Length: 452
Image (tube, rainbow, N blue to C red; front, side, top):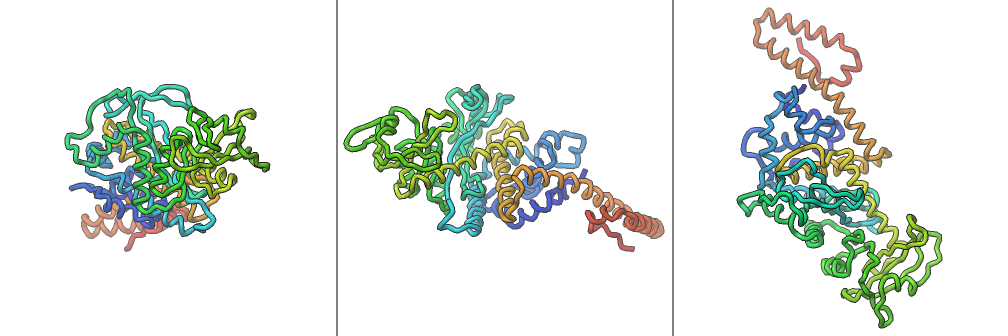
């Protein structure tokens, strides 16, 4: 196993180059993420970042038989638990810089610029002592679980998805009522307070932070859980339009001086004869809203006799443009899937500290951003999953090559501390061994050269 001082050399070559190109360590400094002594922030961040490519959890690495080659477990968790580290500021600034680079790769007049808002499950079923842990309901699996709701805001231009911000939100049925930090002035304590806020409130704050950071987007895409006239009005006041699936509920809409429910509007809507999934559309004003909206009714592929409704306050868009733009919302679903199945979002650490979960989740999001950028900038035909597995294979090759270099360095140190006669003997034997190595090993070890 390679010593910790070579941990940066254990990154895949493509990722190591991206760390420098995207200036990851500089954004860590800008976010005031620091460490007083010992291992640097760059080393700790790179070490945690590279775990997923090794196929090991944090506990497996630090508690395994090679654990003595790395830093102690307490050093890692003390840094992850530090409430003064502003992980939200790091992710915001880092994602904003990557999004700005994406803008240069696309035509701003013809390509989409959207923010996507959605939540997903964050399982902690084996935990008991994590502050804010709650019993929640998984609507996809139709079962309860212990954990958080991970509210996420991301950016998509129709090609690449970049996560911008997130919150680990609790629920009413809390398992643990403990407070994370005694000092309520720290960013960690303030972020924990956010876990008890209502989801729409947190969502609006996320969008405002993204816009304040200079992230340019024309629409916010949401599912029916978030879409409401009130939410759309609040986003409209921020200067951004909304496109969202709407519930067939009790909300009423004003049309020709009369109030109708959504299912009644379906009969009043104007039919659109196209070959696409669009059925009809109508422009109305919500009874509880300030701005008029356009509702597009589309076919429900899961049930032919039913329909779905997409609502927007951007009346300049055609029905086809509304449906096309809303389809980009699927990008966040693929992000959730990749983060959990490939990047070990909920499995890599068993920490009992809320701030450490924030740190870990930020690192997972950073992994996804780098993979997404790598795929995009090279116009890569590989899927994100295929790219991930190839990078993992590079890690396995780097492990033995870096270990071989470390072994040679040890022999050289021993040689330098020996007498002149023994030193000449060791040097000649080592040089002879290097000369006889197969060419494919020399190709992996271009720096493995001994001077006589």
